[in-house]
Length: 358
Image (tube, rainbow, N blue to C red; front, side):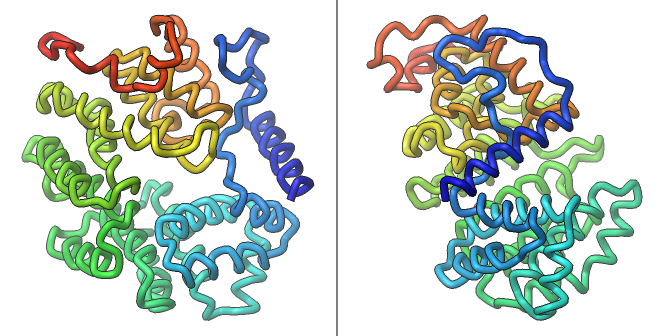
């Protein structure tokens, strides 16, 4: 395992060097990893060996990993792994081609192929047309294991991109939640649909309040410690980055979404790649809200791990954008004066006035 993970870290750093112009030498903010120690989209200990093997053209570890998530019903993990494996296959597909040739009916290979096809269609200028063509592959993935909600998340993404009518989206949503009522990926897909789909107003704006209503209800119903509790954070991100959503939604709802995510982040281990995307999204929202000390505390919890989302929404160099945000936080955050302060990330928000706050 040590050799595998060392190989993976070297691979990640090599990929980063190829994609991005090396930054000029600079000191890392106090208490944070140096710039060259930060890893973009680092996998966890289970996914890492599968990616290393795929880099050698071998699909066995990926097959074993996804089969295990299906056997144990780890639907959120399964979804994350499928997305990462499909992204890898986008540039290096030999292992997936071999897998599908050897086992054309394998539900795990079909699932990766469906995710890859839908993600690729989303990148095309003729998105709606290409997404319609992915229908048979998505349907085959859904038939692979009737218990699996992940194909239905892919179907929801496909429907959103092809401007499906509300009735069709509701049908797909019902299929998804019947299989897993608290599946994170399906909830994120539904939230995105509410902000961009047929719910949009005649002026073309999404219904931001409806997004928040949906996200807050889902978070309240979610199991403790599950990612669906962070759904209001996604709603806050949409409001803060799209049009005039910030003026439509009360500041107190944005702060409450951040507070809920702060509490969730505190339940996960520090410097771990699994909660890195949650923490990176939270850091962005906290910056937008001017909550610098909370953002600094999240940076320390994140450790050396950053993720493409949300930084790739604003730059072709998500790692560089994250490092810029890190410096911005360090310039603006007041010093954390005692360990007890660091243990209570909500303290910055408690007792503040919200009027004229941003």
